[in-house]
Image (tube, rainbow, N blue to C red; front, side):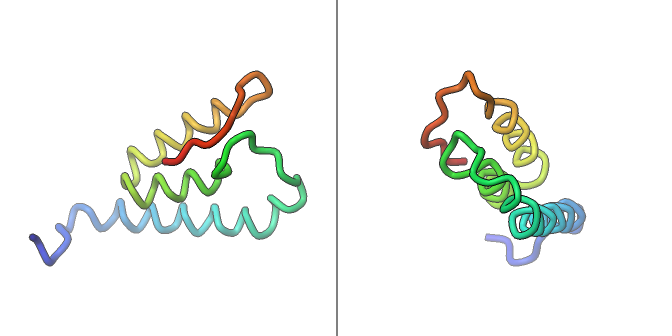
Length: 82
């Protein structure tokens, strides 16, 4: 087990942290204005945060974008964890 994160991973972790912060700001400020609109549980923003924490920046963003693209009126929605 490595106790120190390699230097090349720090920028990706920092960007993921900033993206999570931006999503949390969205959740607290803009999301309440739109009301519950997501067809999935957890919501798309919570899914993106979970995917970033579980998979890291690149895969987390890829999975989050895919989730947002699936969130439309013709998809049945439902439970879909990251």
